[in-house]
Length: 152
Image (cartoon, rainbow, N blue to C red; front, top):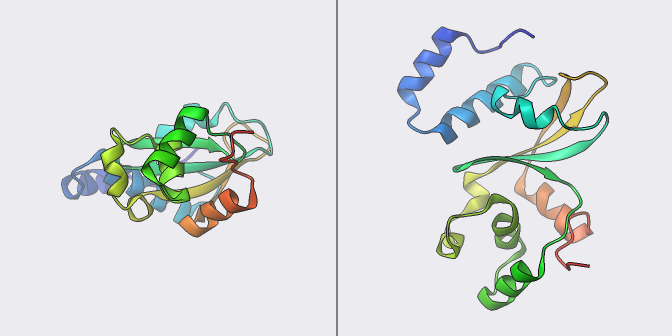
């Protein structure tokens, strides 16, 4: 597979980006922008475990990235924390999947700092179809029940 970002481009970006998060966002956006069948190399191992025609949600955030199932359940501990701290669905989603280092970080605007993509594995080991997803797209899954916060 041909890399879309040359070594020279990477060196230019390395001087501009100070964090892994910034580099990951640059790489993901560049690859998806120019070739929607590629994904960033840093998630290649995780993505290789997906089944053909399976779709997952790929979240890139400040502490790293996560490949999330579109159907999931929140355990009792998280439900209690949601009730105790009066969290919104967005905050609950971030607490459950993006795992902030402390509950105090829930004040941070995850919606601004997190980039989401829907990833579908096609018929080969290295072919993926990636579609950028807005936070409202992601929350639609929460409210439509595809992501289940009831714990049932």
